[in-house]
Image 1: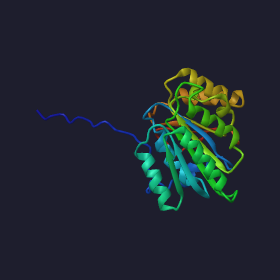
Image 2: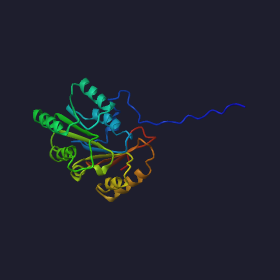
Image 3: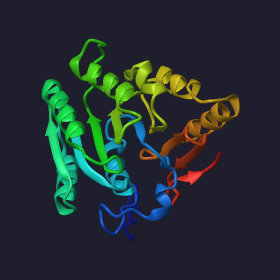
Image 4: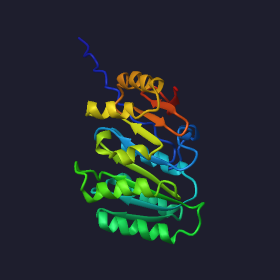
Length: 236
């Protein structure tokens, strides 16, 4: 008898552009047109930091990238190499006090308002409002959002963010979250019931491990990226 061939299990990953830091243009239509104050949430391994490297090249006139967080991973090293390749000043720290000093120095030294400082907080949250990193994130989102500082913060669930951060961001991205209360809060922070209902339907049908939903509050649009999508698709 012939041996039956075992079918290999198909593994899906987020499609990579030809160059890791040259994303397909249509994938960036979901970014706000003006300042970007974003949060990205989702379970560990969902692809949050991976998505970050697709976003960075879509931001024009970046002169400085500040990356702050407790731990660093290989994608952070790729961001550093990208910055070096394009003459962007790169600053990195795992210490909140040092991070605060870096932010102050870079903002004060920036001479032109058309230049953009990209401030990234990744893997920083402790469940405490008096944690130094949490305080720094809150102050940054409330004090720097109308300046030439674009901010992106990454955490595992939405409830980790203080209200001041959630209210002062214009781009929210969620992968699957492990905390149902965080998903509920993410939905409730949307502008109206039509948006909330659309989000609920999309999230409940988000089966792909690396799928995500984007809420752009600048124009109240919702985008989704799922298993069979070539890039984020606008659904609202």
